[in-house]
Image (cartoon, rainbow, N blue to C red; front, side):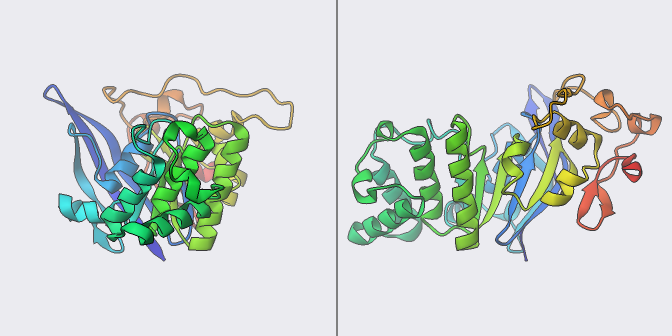
Length: 319
């Protein structure tokens, strides 16, 4: 069952009387109990797409068209008060940096208890019991005593676990995990990803994972959507994507990953275009080894090339 569907989302920024478009007809869906990885280089629009779902875009940003359907209701039609009742309670965010996401002036427990009070109306012993359960769910040892600790008394990995516990405390249907392993070492990264996998399986929670790390999602994601310069350029199931990438950009990303084979790592020529650059046709064509004349003139549509596999490339028939 489809729980969240983003349809043809267009967003831009108003800067000094100029309008720079950042998202172009972004469309993807998240099924119940599944993990969708939204991947791409920094600045491609991943986080802005996720923040649009939560209604947390900057003041200079403007959504010009599109729909964001959650349980068949368009979130873009919700007012501020209605969105406040959805954030945290139904759609929760695991922010990007665990080191700066907690208020250093309050204990971690106080911050978790505040969430339980606002979204579930819990106080006193009932709230504390729920908070302890949330800590135990994310495998924080000595949960009751750790509630009294301040953020500086937690390691990076424990801070991330605490943040995840806050997202889980209200039994949200969707977790948006924005680069949840940033600034963590490889061992802790694996632990956090395993934890998210357990949450997905045990709670039937849907997860939108925002990341630039394809190697990180190769073990955990059910589906993958690749973004480039504000557009979704490929969507597929995990196994299909890694075994049969269609878009030249996806192929280049996979070839740039280190592997056990002693092959030379490949690079992608050129740079990601800025918002102010006006590029006709496919925005990847200046960097593409397969560029044809049509690529410089028309925008390739994102369309099915196989069942449950979409690609936005005029060359996809050849792959």
